[in-house]
Every structure is written in C-alpha cells, then in structure tokens.
Image: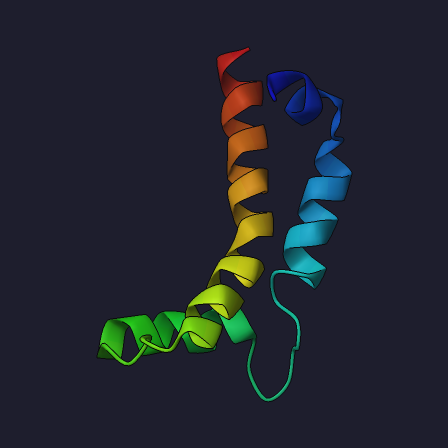
Length: 72
C-alpha cells in the first residue's frame, strides 16, 4: 500500500482533491454540503454518507501522501 502511495505523484493527488473532491462546484461543493450536514446532525441517509466518503477520499489520499512525504 505504501508503494502505491509513493508511486502516486503529488500533482495527481492535488488535482484529484481539487476536481473530484470538490465536484460539483455549483451551487456549492458536495464535500462542503456534506460537512454542513454532519455538523447539523442530518448526515444519516446511507447515500449521503457514501457521497461524503466518495468526495472525502481524494483529500484523505492527499493527506496521506503529504504525511508520507513529510516523514520520509
């Protein structure tokens, strides 16, 4: 798993976070909408949770990549 993270370029990880993580951009990014729902306690439907995880995944990969680079 770490080899896969090492092989991933930082540019691709940033691009994925900015495009897939924030899409759709209008009227507001899905990740922002889902974070607001989580804070309000309305993030309960399975489709909303799946959508949140889907849009949060690129940010998680980017964070793991940056952490891996910092510790290397």
